[in-house]
Amino acid sequence: YPISLGTRHPLTLVKNEIIDIFARMGFTLYQGPEIDDDQHVFTMLNFAADHPARDMQDTFFVERSNTMDVTKNVLLRSHTSNDEAHYMSTHEPPIRVLCPGRVYRNEAISARAHCFFHQVEGLYVDKNVSFTDLKQVLLTFAREMFGADTKIRLRPSYFPFTEPSVEVDVSCFKCGGKGCNVCKKTGWIEIMGAGMVHPRVLEMSGIDATVYSGFAFGLGQERVAMLRYGINDI
Ligand code: PHE
Image (cartoon, rainbow, N blue to C red; front, side, top):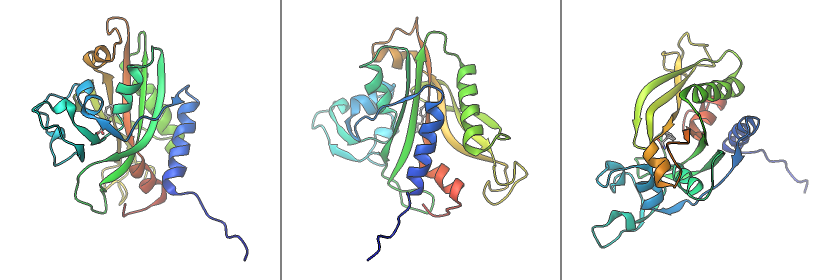
């Protein structure tokens, strides 16, 4: 029989494209564990001991501590931000790293959500890194990924590990912002969370926050792939 040709999965195509774009801005690759401890997924990212994300509703636990000490739990990571804690506690700045990977959340499966999905985490730590650097890196990424006319919009948000924190929207690349079915008539599409790394998070990983600052972002691969290839069911 002739060997039939396959094609790459949309998630792989999108991931490779994202890696290429950030590689041109000097980001190297790092991959941390999918099965991890509470310490790296939550504690070192400044989640309070009673933060709702630690609850059974969101997180799949592999081992729950039988003491009251939540930091002893072993779990499936609910975001790739654990890679920030791993990388920062084992590397000195300057840090410019990109971490693609699979994440798990105990959510109802629907056309828009699945119990495992993929993120790409970015982390940049150096002297004098400012919010302006974050904005420019994200704008450059958006233009490379979605076209030269793409605009970005930052909305105030909250994550325990970044301050200030933002949700990042890109102008709809289908209608150019006029409003269509892809952007649900808003002209904008949300693609990631981002922010300046909280000084406490730097300190918990052994980085002097009086000398260094940084930014981080977490991008949803499925989101980008679905938009890019017109896929309406995850
Ligand atoms: N980890 C966040 C999430 O999963 C995204 C994020 C990453 C936000 C890095 C800010 C900085 O929703």
